Length: 506
Image (cartoon, rainbow, N blue to C red):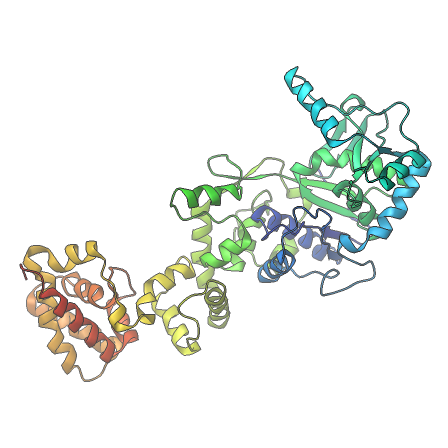
């Protein structure tokens, strides 16, 4: 279900600064951004930082960096400005207090004087009785004078909105009509004891004053939307179009939670990527991530899968956003990334590679562009930049710092009475005498050795790979040796053979 878009579209993304941008939030940003771009509208970034207890220092900059990495720039907001600022809610308290006073004076809100321990006792009693707790409005509610006096005395006074005793229906552009029956509503807090507005109140005021026409957000906010509509009616505000997006789950049906990372860390596993920054550090391309999350809950209507931002803008519409929850398939994401790495120009791929090197604190930092281009060429077909780094990490280690994987040594060098070491010792003189140290020349030399010994390529290539990298992982052996260079290759092979002399069976 969808409505016809006629007004100048103004959409917003309003994160709380509690950490990096979650992948689900990234999809919300993307759909808002696409709707604005599709209709020549305005995309606003607003920081909802009124929850001082959950505020994380430097989170705002992290969110801004994540958005820029994805290519989702904003038209109004932090570091950009605009006509409807400030764009930090913590700087808009005077505005909220003005509308709060209006609600108090009109009787749509009241001071609530209960102490926190009183409310806790009521909740505990309801739980003990196996009943759901519902706040009961005082009759009569405290007067404004009583509330102000209690606050002046230092009590943690809050302000609650008086929910009307009527059913409230939200017409959602994706889900259709959603109704909250009157008997299921309760008065809710719109100003906390610390004087800051709650999310419900601040976002309603800001959406009106910033002239927001469409609110696209996750389905977890659907339960709040009827509260927001009631507030809008009490304040005489317009109600924007609402569209609530499905939840993104893991393939096993669990939510993509930051707790997954904590659990993995405790179990000694590599934490799964949950935040946008995780995917960035893991070596995914922003083009991949944007393309993939666009398809989580939205369909272009045909079998096409690969889109850049401009192409997505041309075909996006709320009419093809589904209601069912999406599943995040990491294997498909990897496949997308492999394909996207082949679709990008060499210059764009290099730019993305350098970003990965910077944010992941890779040992490749400081490497000149020519070598990085050669690394990308030799690792063509890679799935992520992290995989590239793993393949060429040996290049950035000192020759005497190579550590040998015991399993690789046993499997490749030491087995069958040290046949791998024997292959190394027989190949080393040929390498020393090689006139031109190029990938082609090295490849020909290894082929000649294999032909002379009547063995497969792996019988020579793998011992060389373990000798110079310490592992069985690297680019093709001729590219590996060419990248490392003659001097360092010979030094590492000699070091490996010297170490083999301590083995009694070699």
